[in-house]
Amino acid sequence: MYRGGMPRTKGDHEARRRDVSEAVWQVMAARGFAGLTLRAVAAELDATTGLLTHYFPTKQALVRYALDLLDQRTASRPRRHTGAGLAALRDALLDILPLTPEATDSNRIWVSSWDTALSDPDLSTDYGRKYANGRARLTERVAAAQELGELPPGDPARIAAGAQSFVLGLVVQALFDPAAFPPQRQVEMLDDYLATLSAAR
Image (cartoon, rainbow, N blue to C red; front, side):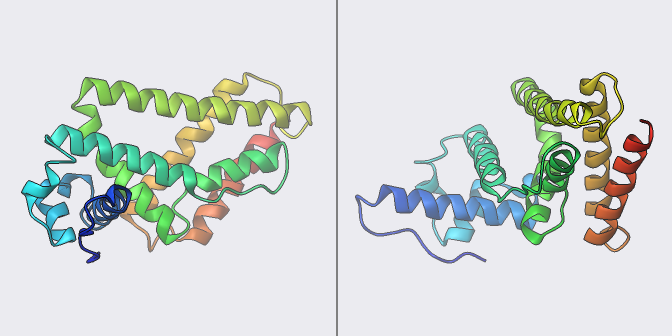
């Protein structure tokens, strides 16, 4: 549990925000999105809920902040760069999977946030946009692999949608049954899926 405490220096606003961010992240990683409350974040900081209302005047503000933090953490993770074409597509899909403790935490939080997003029209639209952007990036890599002759011709957007759906389904299974879907098996299943796509040439 994070016990760094709130900085006492009045002007150290950035340090306070870092402490708050870390506490929000620790709560989400330990309890999932459903466990994210002002009370839980305050306990993580050894602070009062009243102090946190400066940052989050409403639960919605806390939710929005948590999602922004999750976006930032996900975007800042190191990415694989092993090649172009099919290798680049494989890298992008591997980057989604819960193959490390950090990636597992991020995926657990994403999946646990789906319920909140589905019940909020604005968040639901935002999530739809996020996944559409992800498909667009995968589509570019599929098209590049097709140009290199590594994947068969066809609608690259459709192939990308299938790849995204496959890997997100694998994420869910690995989170619920990590013993049956350890990292090595996840990689093997992804490689089998990509081999099937390639074999259709």
